Image (cartoon, rainbow, N blue to C red):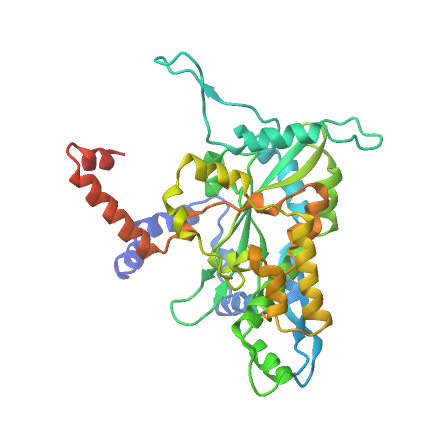
Length: 430
């Protein structure tokens, strides 16, 4: 009677909550005397106070997270009240060791059995064709993985090491997230995936194959006050602030791509897996999907969008075989010449107090749309043969605004509807 009265006299109760209550009080381990004298107001208050714990308590509870203060050198021009380099620091940069995440996933028996360490070609023999057709769909069956695997096996042996060598293929996804409908509270997380695992496993939240590894920071609003204080009565231009954002972005990645990760990239790490077999695993970055704010900081040619218009007389070649060939032949590369130009431009800015977008700096960089920012991926990994241009991939969800994609899709539907046949019903069927 008491349970029935409680259920029917409260409109907010559902059948599922009632069944859950019955399962609790009907459990053999439940004893009413255990909670009879509990002060639930005090319990609620203590639970609410957990959100006010300091940084050290939070870090101790969540093993692996590190809290680092990031400093950058801000260049002020020679005619400002305080010319030269002035250091600016920002805190609240939380990150985890990439190597520790790799160890955690590889040594976990539930995840280890899902990993594909040896790449292969997947082929299909259609009944109406005389030869096999290459099937693409997983990174561990791609030409890029096969090429990286062969290159690793042909590299010089490590001293006193006769272990099998395998690649841990990493994928990074970043997506700035607005936390509230009103206000500017936001997070900029970096998600880390392993492409040794099938995409059909990775897409399942229950598999726990996606790891939050980094929470990037942007320059706070008070940085403008800092810049005004040291530059005089007038704020520097937009190029100055964009450059400082880039410097902060790569300074944070300098902490993430630490010495342990570089060591694992160059020399691998020997691990005894859960099956008792010892391997040497080498980390490799295959995919980096950047959202729009990050594109401005990661891709070095997007700092101030220097004018490099496509010649009007070549527009008719777009999407032709020759155009596709030129994409391969003229592809950007992380060369010593590029690094030298960037270093020379930085000497003008940081040693001789030139403005970031002065004509002397642009004379060095404008021809190739370069910018005076050291790329951390190049600084840390280029000596090991890594070219950061190859890791950047097209992500349509970041290239299209939602409204733009909606308009494009509607236009495509109209084009499909204008054709004779059953195009729209066929599309709906898929």
